Length: 168
Ligand code: AR6
Image 1 (cartoon, rainbow, N blue to C red):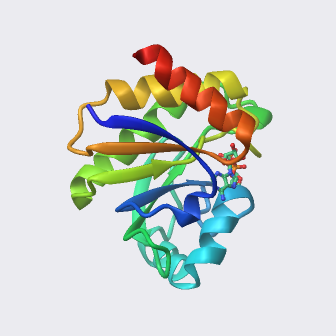
Image 2: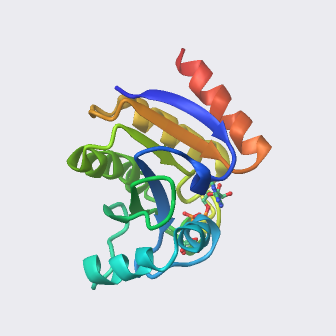
């Protein structure tokens, strides 16, 4: 099981093997963390998305592209359920973390940083989004040694930190 670390800040600045993107089914960029990753990583990420995901990506699934000029080597894209649009199946959210770690294993990534999938534009209730992230990552068998859960704002960071502490 990986070591879980709460981090406060911008995921695009994380010096890890792979960062995870909260993408959408079209896989052609967007707002939120998706927009930040494409902006910071440059056009190679979109070019790779078009080449590797001509038909997009299913909700709950994950796949990878180059990280362009980001410090990370790869971006692992995953698509969370859109709670606001009525997608409330928690197993899809759990699947995002599991599938992303599977892709990390395929790549040989040892350190991975996640944002809080579905917790922004897609409106998943924050506390449950934190619980799903912490529970799933800590229960997944993977060769990834270090997982950083990145809270963009101070409050989210503290929620993540506290949830990790409860695990002990
Ligand atoms: N670093 C870390 N976390 C961030 C950053 C950042 N730079 N920017 C935002 N967050 P969201 P979703 C946090 O909306 O809910 C996009 O348009 C944010 O505060 O990025 O899965 C996609 O293209 C929140 O806690 O992703 C999709 O259409 C978390 O990242 C849709 O939004 C996720 O918020 C996906 O929605």
